[in-house]
Length: 206
Image 1 (spheres, rainbow, N blue to C red):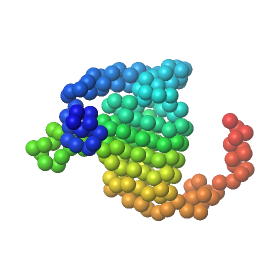
Image 2: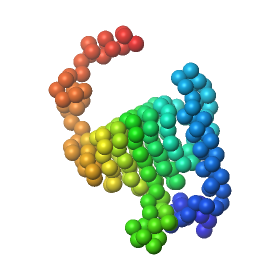
Image 3: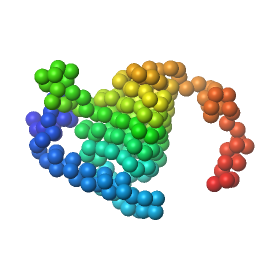
């Protein structure tokens, strides 16, 4: 079994061979270039995103963004990533369509043994965030977690276990507070209603 196969299968690994250091070095160069792009160089940002992720990516990224490899990150159409997000992508991070990230969200696919004698080794477990999720500012998503579609993760949460679809989940460790309910569909904040008039006015101001 190669080291890359060990990583993909969740076994203990190190990352000093098989071209992994070179891949990370290339990723850092691309990351620095992406983070240097300004609001007037969006075409360059799109070009760099294709190099980083290995495919056309119809997502919006507010630099700076930090990652290890880039090519292990899959971003769905219409996803929005706010500034200072950190993706430790030693294995796959799969993000669905229309997912919203607040600032300074961390996704870590890598863990280390608790046993101090083996802590120099790593293991990697994929992370999946399904369509239409909202990940609040400063949240941390831990290795192996799946967050179900439409769910909301409250700001500052530490997500150590799977979160089911259509949930509002908060805290450290993150727990499901409740399901998304009828009031959520009517109101945008507490009891402040979403009205057709408001939406029409907002659209007219664009």
